[in-house]
Image 1 (cartoon, rainbow, N blue to C red):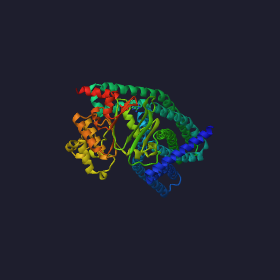
Image 2 (cartoon, rainbow, N blue to C red):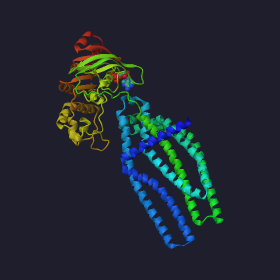
Image 3 (cartoon, rainbow, N blue to C red):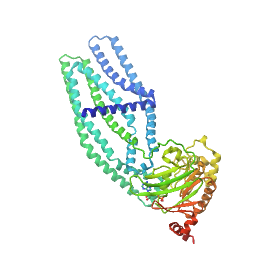
Image 4 (cartoon, rainbow, N blue to C red):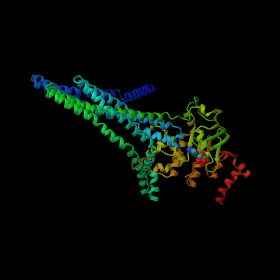
Length: 595
Ligand code: ADP
């Protein structure tokens, strides 16, 4: 059983290694070759140098053949030049190669985050795995180079051992035995350190969060207002102390033990050196042999330590790679398995849709059924938390319904390709963020400069009422919507951000418009302008919108009233008001305020 487990783990390791080698080659075959060559050639050169030195000393002692001595000295010079050249080449190649590899690996992790289910961003376990994957992203390249270093150290160890054993087999056996205890202890130590770092990742993240908020603009004002600078530093120190003490308690005893165990090979090497000296005194070995053996023993000692460390690094990196893989393997709930394309949505239908957020128990939407036909304007009304935004998220397949179906043109949305579903909508969310890109990049989102339709963009800017922002910005539409990068960028209000996001919606010009509180941060004048604009551009569009200001409902052909995730009323505004039920009540609250 144990043998089978070992074989499986070796095979798994080889598979990982092959994957890493492929990754390294995909970054650059040439750089990979140079790095591999370097790792193998250097220890061979070192052994060769030690051997040439022995021959030089023996020649000086015995034959005094100066031609041979000169030739040998020249060859050590050539070897040293080659080593120096290779060292420099390796430094350069490593830097370049690592930079390409870094990009490849980060894109691999980014790819997973960009495609992850929206639910993942509510899940602390996901964040833990993501943090570990990001922290360990170097494992891919490290495991490869640790293995190559390991092979290089083995070449050095076996090369030197072979020469030493040739003279005395016992030396070799003693040296191998001397390294076993430290090897086993280091293995345990590496596992302990890694397990600890995984165990502590959640608290580590809480600690990092505090450094994060200390440097972020959105928290800067509150931190100063509530004077919580000291509180934040103390909280940070508390987390740090807790993590530090836990690490110290677990790591210290093992470190001391490894320190002692590392003395064993040193003692054995010391004993062997003494034995060699005795044999020289007895005339059984030459002075050349002495320099050869002391050189080889030093190389052997450092080779053994390097091999142990590299083996441990491989083990450590393998655990890290397993973590990255487990991050990569997080299953997607929202499957992109549909095969149909959809260009235009003629009809949206909810059939008995219920929804529970992953990891919770409460039904946020409960048995929802309705149908929206082409070009209809429908308003979703309800108090906060009634489920309006959730309904919009289901339409966009950020989540799939727990029960029931959503149909577009009579076909379940899961049968369409995910991108083609989302491409049918223009969406405006309450927390619609703009990116730290230029104004034009924000409006024509995802388009390269040469793909932008500037006529359409200036129309969108006009309709959304953001001309004044563009006109006063230093580089017009090419101005950055943040001052994070330099002073030519601009910082704008939340209401202005909403208008830019609306300009994006108008620019995309899709047939179905989803608006979730499009005017929540706008002043009454801007709000009225925006709704007029939506009315104007929305003539030939299907619109589903939520708005807490019920006066905006003039835009709606009919209204859905949600409460606790259920449709409690629907119909046009006048009918709902006449019924004098929940909608009339909500409407009444707002009308009261304007009396
Ligand atoms: P509305 O848009 O009507 O204000 P939402 O659709 O945002 O309401 O929220 C409906 C309910 O779902 C609320 O009770 C809210 O707490 C809950 N909810 C919203 N988002 C999540 C989430 N990511 N995870 C768990 N519950 C959520």
